[in-house]
Amino acid sequence: MRTVHIHPKDTSRVICSIDAPSPPSSWFWCGEDWPSKVPASQAMAKRFMGCVIETSDIQRTAKQYERLLGIPFSVKDSCFALGNDQRLLLVESHQPRGDGVVGFLLEATDRRDVGRRHIFSQSLFFDFL
Image (cartoon, rainbow, N blue to C red; front, side):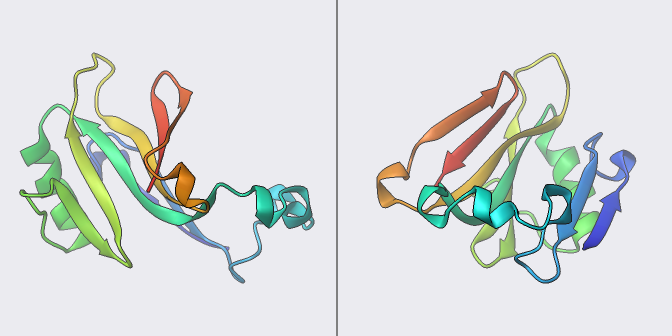
């Protein structure tokens, strides 16, 4: 497992840990036999497509992430293009809880799930693209 931790002062108070399993099929936190517990036919997502961060100041947060990521922010799309059709989307906050991750974008396994939103908790959702 390769892991990068990013300090909250660099990400507008978002604690960020980016993990890359090696080999890609391994995920040691789940145990060695995790793939057998979720058959591919039941997997709702093929791959991670992005993350949604809510912020009270999109311009300030975009500048922080431009420095952190080293790539430009698209004002038109309100996101950072991360490659492989993946993106980091910044949206205006309407919550008193402050800035933070509010959603994940996932590529749907089944085309019938495209456009579906799964509400995981009061402050976290999964959108299927």
